Amino acid sequence: MNYTIEHRTLHFKQPAGTSRGVYHTRDVWYIHLYEGDWHGIGECAPLPDLSCDAYPNEEYEQYLHAACRMTCQLGHIPYEWLRDYPSILFGLEMVEKKRLSPRPPYREGASYTQGGTVREGVSSRNAVPSLHFSSSDKSRGRGESLPACGPLCRINGLIWMGTYDEMRRQLEAKLEAGYHCIKLKIGAINFEDELALIKQVRRDFGSEVVELRVDANGGFGNNYGEAIDKLHRLAEYDLHSIEQPIRQKHWQEMAALCADSPLPIGLDEELIGINTTAKKIALLDTIRPQYIILKPMLHGGFSGCDEWIRLAEERGIGWWATSALESNVGLAAIARWVAQYHPTMPQGLGTGLLYTDNTPPETEIRGDELYLL
Image (cartoon, rainbow, N blue to C red; front, side, top):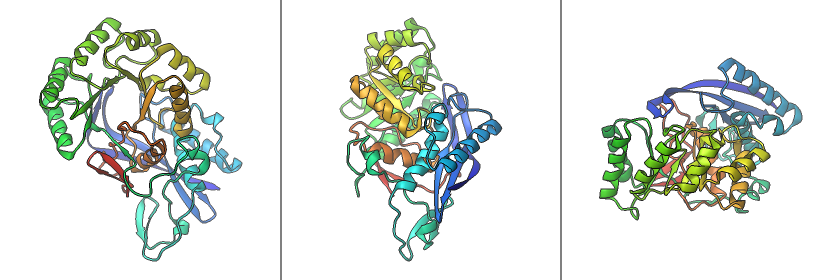
C-alpha cells in the first residue's frame, strides 16, 4: 500500500453557530490509499477547540503522515497507537472498510466516484467503492447486512443557534420538509428567547407529532443550581432529552444532574478524550447518563464507538450517533456504520449539506429518512 494526503478548506453555506463560537470554514484532510490498482478515500477533520487531536495544522499533518506510513508498512491500522487520535483513526478505518469490502464489477457506462468527482464509465478498478462492511464488522452490530434498498435510518432535523427569528424560520422549514424529530441547539442566545421558541413549538405541535431534543453544548456553565433550574423549566415542554447541559470534566456535578434531572441527559463532549476502556467504564459508572451521543470523528472512530455502544448497552444506557460537521464522505461512512445496528431512534446525521464546496453526495434525505444514492 501507499498513500497521499489532500488538504482542503471547506466553506459553510452559512455560519455554523455553537456555544463555543461560530464556524465559517472547516479544514479537512482526505487520505488516499492505494493498493495495486485500487484507490480508497477516508476523511480526517478534527474540530478546533473541541477534538482531543485538534493540533495546529502543520503538527496534525505530521501525525497523519506517520499514521499513514505505519498503516502502509504494517498492512493494517495500528489501533492502539491511534487511540488518542480519533479523527485519524476515523479516516483510516473508513478506507480499511472500503479496502476489505467486495469491489463492484465494471459496467460500461456506469458512474463511479474517483478522486472526489464522478467519472462516467471509468474502470471500477480505479474507482472508489462505496463503504461496505465485512462479516467481522457486522458481528459488532446486529449480525445483519445493510438493506439493499430503503432507508438507512431516520434522522433528526437540526436547528442551528441564531436569533429567535432565525431559529423559528429554520424550524418551520424542517417541519415542512417532513421531520418528526427536531434538535435545537441552545445556550448561545438569551435562555428566555430559546424557551419561548420551544413553548411556541409545543403550543402548535404535541409530543406525539414532533419529538424535541435540545443540545446545550455545555452552555449552562458548571453550576448545578443554575443548570437544574433550567432543566426543570425545559421539562415542562415534554422534551425527549438534552445533550451536555454543563461543560465536560465536571463528573460529580454531571452525575448529580443525571440523578436529579426531570429531563433525560445525554453526554456528548463529555466523551471526548476518554479513549481507553478503563476510562470509559469509569465515566459511565460515575455519571450514569440516560444517553450517550456518539461522533466517530471525536469519540474513537468506528471501533471506539463500537466499544462505547457495548459498554453503554451493558449498563442500560441508550445511545444514538451523530455527525461532527463532516463532508459528504464522512457522513456517508457514519450512516452506513450506524445502519448495521438497525436503530429505532432518529440519528443525528442530517448535516452533510453544510458546505458550498462539499464532495459529491453519497446519501439523500427523503422526509426524515436517510437513503444511500
